[in-house]
Length: 385
Image (cartoon, rainbow, N blue to C red; front, top):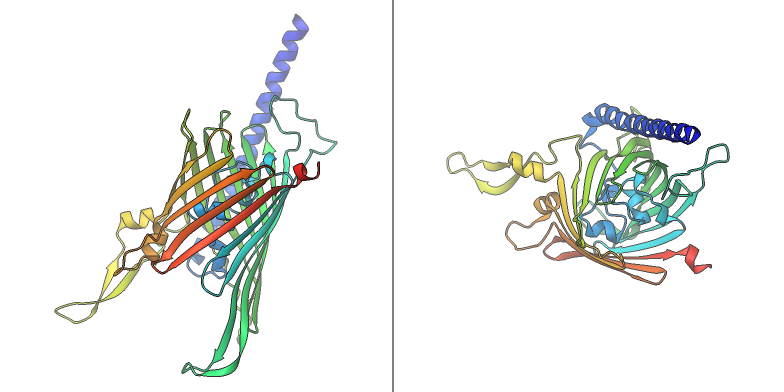
């Protein structure tokens, strides 16, 4: 009886030490995110490679363009926050293709693989903890603008054509810390070539994720695109200018309503800067001075431009999902003033058929332009058995 009590106390001490270690690591990650943000906030609005903000998969597109808190085995979520890699993302291959704009091609390919802890570490003994707590994934997504014809400054065609494309590679790693916490990092080289102009950059993401024991609440925090150009698009007398990547600090919350198939999402993006758009002008002129009127963005409008809301229907079996989202920034910036549109809204659905998962999403940028995105995810581990 005495030995049993000692063992129980020793296990409790180990549990406390493990939790304290997890908290310490999470605090280090959060401090890194904060320091990086304060160090680069002055560069907001002066960045290159804006295509990095495009949704890498149809699931992300359906969720409003970004989601940094939902971890359910979808390997593409790691492109939003590396800490979202999951034990279910093991040996998952995912392909995505999008009809983004006429003449363009946008898509991605991803693969996830999990690894067991090293032999020098003490193996997990807790109930329900993963056997392979090291999560790895690699992905590539590209944007091809198609062929464009040469023309002079008056718009007169001069013959011939040229291409333009952007390529981004994500190398992601996440680590499970106990049952509730996960942290992750991503290394992301970026390459763009427009006609004979080219640029290369290196970036990184740092993220953390928390989930309650009953999985009803999830929270994610990530700092995306920490980095800068190593080679600029052009050179001047002062050398090749090196611009920053589009830094984005995001906080995400996901809540599943108990005993229902409903899941709610709220994402707060670009937390490092308040002014996403300062003002806009129109053809309206002052009756007294004749000057063009500049319309200021009100504070509550600006606040909601930092948010994305989504409602998802997912049954307990998770064999399918349906999601509707609203991105207010997309609505405000891409809506046509003199025409009706549903810009800012996105709709998506997915279904699992044996070892395959098929996703589809549709969103509207303007009245005459819809973006369609399809995705196919395969469970390689089940296919080879």
